Length: 129
Image (cartoon, helix red, strand yellow):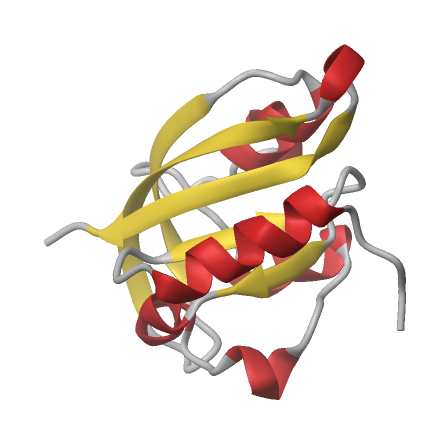
């Protein structure tokens, strides 16, 4: 079992208790966890996917703008939160793992420890009608 910072363990515990869709990434942007509330939007249970590497999960969900163009990784909120260590917000469309295209909106924020050390980021998102 890989060692994780206590803050990430606690954040995962918090996320698992929330009814708001939430996901957690490590400092590299690898998806570590998404909660049960996120499963209908993502299109699969976390137990079925497990952790997903940064480039792989961006490719799976194919985030697109309103004009249909792919959103570059550098403009995606979780990238901004981990690489620039600041919160970010965006509305986009994704293709869920069940094949459904969904419009979502969300925020991502960095998880910073002492001395501004980045532990990863958390994202809270919701489906937009």
